[in-house]
Image 1: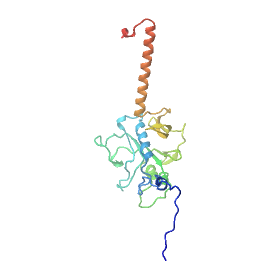
Image 2: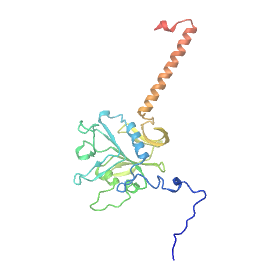
Image 3: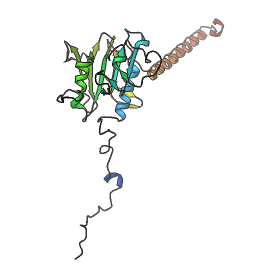
Image 4: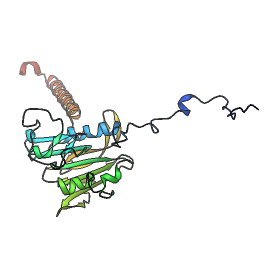
Length: 259
């Protein structure tokens, strides 16, 4: 007796393939060995942090920051590393030994450890980022352990694009303590900056972003914003000059002869 496969009726009309095949939510860009990387948000958000990280208390030539760069932290285990979504360092030249672009950040070869680290939470990395994983002997420690106990990073920031929750921790007495936000921002007086959530358009995308402010809450502009502001100021100055010239003409004065 011949057995036929069970008939599965089609919808009428049949659904298009794009409705039945896997979507980007089923097929993310995660690396199975290093979950959480990468996606559009993990690309754009660090760029905004990079562009607006301008500590006013430091020579700009001694300010360095990076995104998705291997951070080597243990000289006894030189192949162990973490890869922060973004980190900033002060007292360090932009080029390695003033000569070359960095391939990684090897802490025992650098004059300073990161001063602030930002991790962008995702379901695959949240437990490690928040120190919820147990310590396993002879295995690399979690990011939380590395930043708190080994590198002793003064400020550790975590931000979720899914909940838009911003959490911050400051190193106090050798361990991290939660920071209470002031006006929705984290003050870092050592840098002359604060870090907070901003609602606006960056690279054509309107959403909540994490970005740097002054201590009083003024935005640190990124280059595109500076160019727009300069253009607006030039246009305003031109309009004022045109108004003044017209008033002079009404008084019988030729403004061209005053030049």
